[in-house]
Image 1 (tube, rainbow, N blue to C red):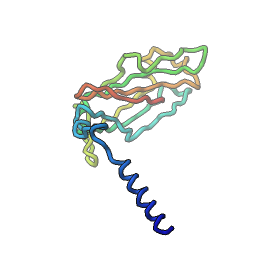
Image 2 (tube, helix red, strand yellow):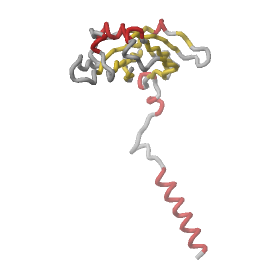
Image 3 (cartoon, one colour):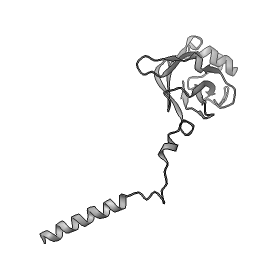
Image 4 (cartoon, rainbow, N blue to C red):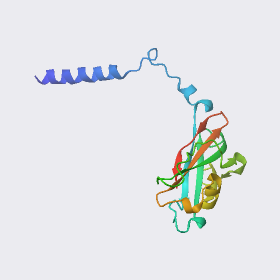
Length: 172
């Protein structure tokens, strides 16, 4: 019985080893091609963010600051532009209504020449500040129409030298 148990364990390990073997003819993956710069993306990491919650009573003097750091297959060298789009969620039935952040109008753009290189990481960074008044002016919203549950939406889009456009949404 003891030998039978060890034989079964050995057979099971053999089957697991055979089952895990990758047949390159049935599953061809060219890892070198996958890591070429034109086949990779880029992303922006939020390094610092300040002022994400605004006081509606003092809306004209509120600010949101953000510092973004870029990374890609070439340590941020593929990032050509960073564009910000602004939107608005009213969250109240009687006021302005929703304005999507993907309406197509670019609010602010940074070129790669505007980026600075971080000494620690060696990656490009950019910092910017958005005031509530700038966002309201861009969207044509009167401060008196902004309610307690309202939210401004900032969307950024990275454009790389390979022609890809990538980006998330931030709600302020």
